[in-house]
Length: 124
Image (cartoon, rainbow, N blue to C red; front, side):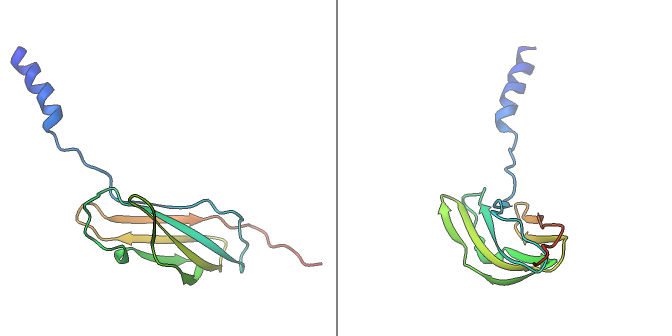
């Protein structure tokens, strides 16, 4: 019995621990845009595998319901956390960014919904 308990205790240190794949999120929008408006979206990417050799250029961002007008390069804002700004024009009330990154450690395949104002403001 003592041997079994010792083996169970040791197995907790031997079992592989899997870290989650890279994380990406859309920073909170300061202002909720309306359809046909232009806005800035900020993506933050956190590298969870410190020894990752894939360049940031392998991150693909595909807009759905919006058009990307311009984008900055990825900039490291803290250890292992990078950010990129996108100037976009909202084309539909249902918008999202599809983000993908191939990686042998799980990669990244996310759909981030962008909040859009439901009604348009009327001019006066």
